[in-house]
Structures are given as structure tokens and as C-alpha cells.
Length: 546
Image 1 (tube, rainbow, N blue to C red):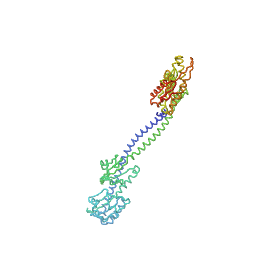
Image 2 (spheres, rainbow, N blue to C red):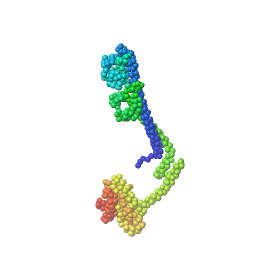
Image 3 (tube, rainbow, N blue to C red):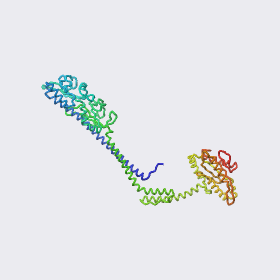
Image 4 (cartoon, helix red, strand yellow):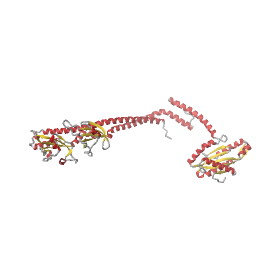
């Protein structure tokens, strides 16, 4: 049976559930709205960050190219008569702009005449793109490695050094080529730009940045991805200078809010086709919304408990009269009081108490009438013993009780010997008196839980609870006691009457697993007792008569 809860508890539970459900619903709606807003805001932030970095890289590259243009107009380079002066000029420039890893001046054939820190002086770079492309005009080359130069420059990190080339031709006053001004910018400059511009927000929001080359390989990013191709669906639709954002699935299988901007250069610098990508994991981006949702749910749960307690206290005012009515009903059921008290309070409570009072009065009258009718229906009017109807109702209960208590049922059919002679000699009134007296004797020989029923005429049936290990012995003992008791004389108005009794018995389920069949066996045993001399007990096991 499911547990029962009081009305106060149910009322408090309903309030708690309503407040909890409302908090969950509002939290879900707010969480979804916040997640959508965070997605759009974070996406725009990623796009703006990528634009800021690519714009800074373009401006820095354009400014470095502008510096070289200014140098190319100096008389010391256009008329390179004093190599020492040129070398001093290049050293000063390299110190002022640390991102210039190397800068040198060559003759028209590509031999280095002067350079910063005297590196590569006397060497030929005639076959290098930094020289060959400069013969055509201003050259800005993409990121590359320079093995020879990397060996000569300090490298505290030990990682492969990469450079960006800027070079241009130098013409004399007569317009003739006098040499090439070539420089290698250290690619670490791009990482310096990233840290200076973006590191605070990167640490606070766990944002990652990538610089993607024109060919689609990673130029700047995590060490494990540098030099690897990066394929994102959004890269194909970018236009120079155009920033976009989207949720993209990256090669690691995770989704990120991704901002992308394709370089468009700066002023007359056309750019190198770099793309700056800023990304933040979707989980990280939505974390504030999740924390907000969790806070709402926690506060909502707390409010649900507070309101539930408040509802429990308030409901007590309304349920107290109902509890008093229930207590009175329990006392009435136990017999402590005789009626339900009349309650004063709200109209509904007062009406309920009056209705229950009337109902109890009506039920009491009906119960008395039903009790009288049931007594008449289930008992023999002459002897007061249970009849066949009561017996049929009792037998299944006795079976179940015996099974639970691991006992057997002893079934004893009793038939009075020579009862007809009493009727014939003293009349039916005397016979009725005799039956009443013998019925009382049978009842007095029973134990609690046993039953004796009058089946009709002078025939009776006793149902006994007997232990399994000693079932027949106890049944026979009761049968013999009944025979002895019924054999005692009975004083009638007409005189003393003495009769005998025959008993037939069987044990269920020892003699038969079916109760009906066991009763039939007991009836057959009664027949044998009558045939073999009466005033004795016979059992299904064919033991000798008593």
C-alpha cells in the first residue's frame, strides 16, 4: 500500500513543486536567451579580435616597408662610397627596431657589402628571393625559414627561426642600380604583437589565436599545429578586410566560436594573404550562462523550500479542524466516544462536521441492522452454531492461516447416535433442547481458532488447527473428548436422555491436497464408524476404532 501523506504535506509539496517548476522554467528560458546572447556577443568579439590583430600586423609590415623606403633615399646608400657609414646606419636601425633580425646592403651583383652586426658580409645572396625579387621593386615576402642566418643569430628558445623578407632596389643619382637593401624581420614579432594586443583577454577568456598563411598552413599558433594545414568551412568565403564569425568544428572534433579576418594590407602595402583566426570553445563561451542557470536553480530551490514551509504553516490553520474530525473518528472507531464533535470555523468545515455526524449516525444504525442480519444468515437459529454458509466462508481462511503457520486442518464429522429415539420418545421439543445442550458441549471442547458448525439435523463438523508433527494424535484426542462429552446424560423435563456419537476424521493436506476431497474422506470415515458399531472415531488412516 503506498504511503499516505497529510493535506498539509501535500499542500507544502505542491507549493514547492510549483515554485521549483517556475524556477526551472524561468532558468531554462533565461539560460537559453543568455546562451544565445553570449554566442552572438562572443562571436562578434572573436571577429573583432581577429580584425584587430590582422590590422596591427598589416600596419607593422607597412611601417617597416616605409622605413626601408626612407633609407633608400639617403645619400649614403645612393652613393655607397663609405661602407663604414652604411654599416653604422644599419646597426642603428636594427637596434631601434628589434624585430629586424638582419638588414644588409648588397652591390648590384648580390654580394653583401654591409650588414647589421657584420653578419653575412662578403657572402652572396644573389640566388635568394630577397635579392632577386627586389630587382623588380619593393618586395615583401611571406614567412619562411633561413637556415644560414638562423645559425648566426642568437636563439634562446631553440625553436626553428622564421623570417619575413622586406627588400627594395637602391638606385644612384643617375638611375643606375647601385645595390639592394634587404632585411629579415623575425616572425617572433607577430607573437609579440599577439601578446601585447591580446594577451589580457586571452588569459581571461581562454581565447586562442592563429595566423594562417595564404596556402592555408598555420604560421602562428600552438606548437603542434604550426606548419599544418587548417581547413575550416568559413575560410573559403572570406573577403579581404572582411571579418566573420561562426561556430566551426575544428580538426580536433570540438566546436568553437570562431572569428576570422582576411588581411587586406595597409595603404600601398597589399598584404600577404594572411588570415587571423580567434577561437573560444563553445563550452567556455557558454559557461557564464550555465553558471547563471545554476544560480537560478539554487535560489529557486531555496525559495521553494521557504515557500513550502510557509505554506505548511498556513495550511495548518485550515487543516486543524479536519485533523480534529479525523481524531474524533479514530476515537469513535476505538469506542472512546460515541459521536463526532460539531466543529466551528469556516462554512465548509462546519458543513463537513455536520455531514459526518449524520453519516456516522446512519452507519451505526445500518451496522446494527447488518450485524443482526449477518448473525441470522450465518448461524443456526436453534443451536447458535455457525451454519453451512459460515462454514464455507471460514474454510478458505482456515486454509490460509494453516499454510502461514505451517499447520494442518483436522476435519471431524460428528453424527449423534440414537437421536431419533429421543424425538420419538420425548417429542421434538425435547430433541431441540438436547441439541442445544450438546452444541454447548461441543463449543466448550474447542480451542481459539477452531470451529464447529451444525450441518443440519444431528450432524456437525469440527475444523481444528493441529501441528504437522502430531496432527492425527491431536485430532483423535479431540474426537475422543467430544465422544466422551456427548455421551454424558442430559436432563430433560421428560427425564434423563443418554445418546452416543460417531466421528469420522481426515487430515488436510496430509490425506489429500484438495480440501473438498479431504472432507469427503472424513465423511467416508464417519460411515465406517457407523457401520462398525457407532460411538467411536474412525480416521482416513484406517487406525483401529477407539
